[in-house]
Image 1: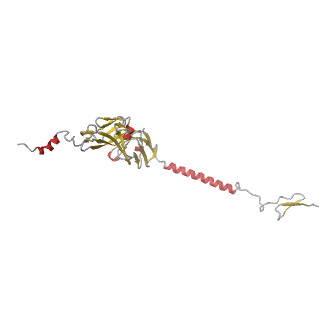
Image 2: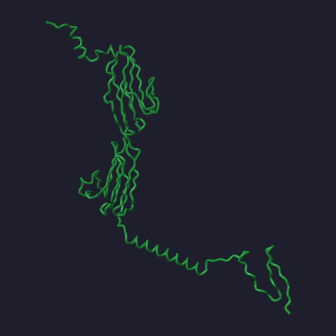
Image 3: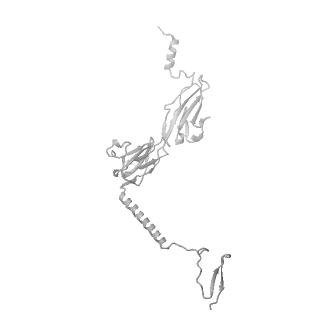
Amino acid sequence: MLSNPSKRAPEVANQIPGYFNVLAVVLKTDNNSPWTDEFDKIELSCLIESISTTNPRIEWKKITNDGPSYVYFDKKISGDLEKRAQIKEPASLVITNATRSDTAKYRCEVTAMDDQKSFDEIVIDLVVRVKPVVPKCSVPKSVPFGKSAELSCVEEEGFPKSQYQWFKNREEIPTDPKISSKFFNSSYTLNTDTGTLRFTAVRKEDAGEYFCRAKNDAGYAECPSQMMEVYDLDVLGIVMGVLVVVIVLLCITVGICCAYKRGYFSSQKQTGNNYKVPAKGDGVDYVRTEDEGDFRHKSSFVI
């Protein structure tokens, strides 16, 4: 006995590819989150699964924080991809030389006027990975025993953002010193996100050659190794030095006081109040007048 044909129609529709071609345009992609390394080739797949329109309108748009902009419109590549991309039939976008600025969301849009569902779109999130450049490292040349020290490592070109590793004498420093027998007695904190290695109290064993590695999914880069020395703080020498300075200053002070007492730094100014009358000469008396403030003289004869 034959079954009802009307009940079998949905089953047939699901089994026969392209059955809905006359009803709608349908898109799909092989990868909606592709990635590539900088300067490599990448394909953003936009596959037309079903369509009945002969010449559909195909458009690609790049979506950033500033809004969407055309990448492919009116059968032409535009924008900063004009000389670096092409359309792979029927609708995929191929970027031949990807750069870090290509990291964004891209939208493939297909309009089929002869289909009942005449429009469909898919969004593809592209990531262009950038290898880190040589990081800038800062390592103190010498640190007193028991004092704190900070080593820094910075790299800002890599994408995704770099993670950091520190090495001492070519051996990786673990984030937790307690998990390694070689660093068990060290007291430090290591931040792999910022690249900061901070010793709370350095020991003699912390002396050595240090370098940093910045890494991400695209690769890694290292800065040249730098030597950090740890020296003993000579407390006795510092105290003796301070005593010598104090003694020298004390001697200088005593010398200045003695010089004042002996009159080496005194100065006498001849003013109207402390003026000394010159000694009398033969036959001349010097008299100072109160009104004029000057000196007159008169002659006297000695009989």
